[in-house]
Image (spheres, rainbow, N blue to C red):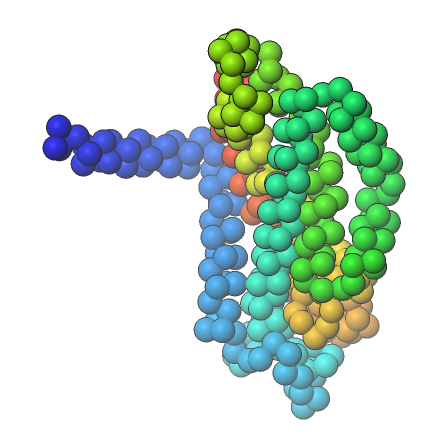
Length: 294
């Protein structure tokens, strides 16, 4: 029995290795998206080491310089180094996305679990609130919330988390209602388990896969929404580097003269959104029992 622990650990490592190899073979786009996500995270973490200049250090002497050995992606109309701002912009995008996805996941999980489990008047009232929120145009409602909270990285993340959380409560609610039809749910109630124990021990673990899928597919949408807000001037306030903010102002003014100002931030947004979307789609295919069976 003394060697049972190491044997189990070795078996778990082998199963994990086989799972990773199978994922790479069956979901190549998802693996490529995961690689892009890893690169983005590393860039954000190592930004002080990777950036050549201070991202908020402007200099009129280096305005609109083309890409070269010193300024890899050129400079913009204010004299900012585009490469350094893109590197630090990865931090901004990931921070906003982390706040939004965390709030979205908690809100969707709690509200969806309670409404799907108890139903009745609680479910009716919450669903009418969700209907009212979803009846407004997405961007108008988002701009209103950001205007009320104020423009900052945290507030933008909170606004995006609230709106996405309200939208995805129905996904969790539907999964909870499906779990309630299973025999183990009825058995738990028959032996006298309390409501809290049933929700936490029997329902929540069985709706974990949809919750993980919701969290994974939200990242790309949040990054794109934050870029849209910053482009419109309601997102991350300057001079903090934001990919969406880099596409407005000088990028529109000097696009024909200095196209690199808009090309590289747009490329960064595209790669980040593509990476998270491909990874999220692959995780959905792997974790969703209906798609996995098919």
